[in-house]
Amino acid sequence: MIASKFRTVIAAALLSSSASAITFDAKVVDVTDGDTVKVVTGETCTEGKNCRAGLVQYRIRLAEIDAPERKQPYGTKSKQALLGMVGGKQVKVEQTDIDRYGRIVAQLYAGQLWVNGEMVKTGNAWVYPQYAKTQALFQMQDEAKKQQQGLWSLPEGERVEPWKWRKAH
Image (cartoon, rainbow, N blue to C red; front, side, top):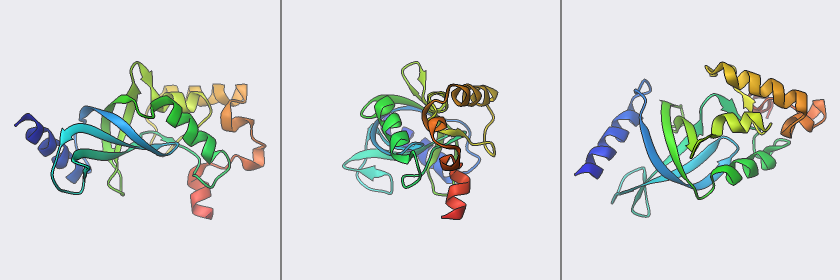
């Protein structure tokens, strides 16, 4: 009964782009790139778009940040950094929105670690200014630049914001 109610609440949230924040625990089962993961909730299911191997699964897009694309310079390293932080781990998902691809946009926590912020702080992702609401992210990015962390160690010509890279490719 509880599992059914949980799926109903999540499903309702997925149908609404203005869904109120929902928080749930899940296990990361795949890291797509430096800002997208797949998680399973541990709740069982038998069919449906979000049912994989009998468990409820969601694609999660990290809120407020944008990581290099897979074929973009630093894309592989960004993905590896996220994999190291959350791969196979239990995480807390704090949904903030649903994107145009149906992914849950969320703040992600691995224990006490704020994953979205850590990706920026370590130079593995940019702040996505179009969607950023957390001022601390800009400060983290400035510090990563100053310290030449991660992608900020690349030659300037290779540091192309993902939103500009996608448009060009």
